[in-house]
Image 1 (spheres, rainbow, N blue to C red):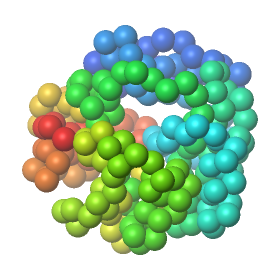
Image 2 (cartoon, rainbow, N blue to C red):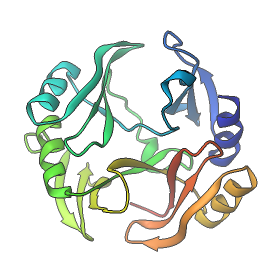
Image 3 (tube, helix red, strand yellow):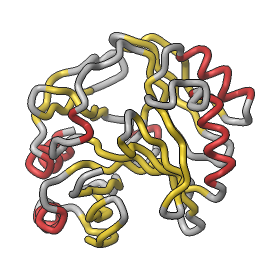
Length: 233
């Protein structure tokens, strides 16, 4: 936990506040007073690699969990009570892990604009169209107000828009195990990538321009992979 905070704090401008610790050490990362991510310490006996987990907000974690099972996914944990809501951990039919979070809807949209906040999530998978059907049915994207959620195909990706902003994509990737990758917003991609190496991390890919801004793929000192992005969405 200490090593993670020493890396992400100065890299993304995060401040840390204590979180619920019923399952072990846990802190929340905040940007301008708004909580945007969480860091938890795994028991060494789990022997799992360090990784970021993407959680999808939903009105009913139990109903979404039923949808995961009915559509060929795997439910690993929960749903169970956690802090101010209910959570579950699952994997889609192709093996990409993700989380489900039922809680009070937030009013802040800081994740779209502020440096240090999540700006984009992207699924790398062997069949993005089948994956889009799975997630769309589990989270009922098609049954919602089109002004709130819209799914379209652009730039060789299936893209999810929320209130007119591109927030997620599903794209083809054969060279990596299926996974969701989080992109954190930064003011300067090149400078942040350089800062990451100075803090003990690694640059895995980029920096490079993309249809959605200038991006780079990084790894923290313990091997946790994530991306950074500068530019409007």
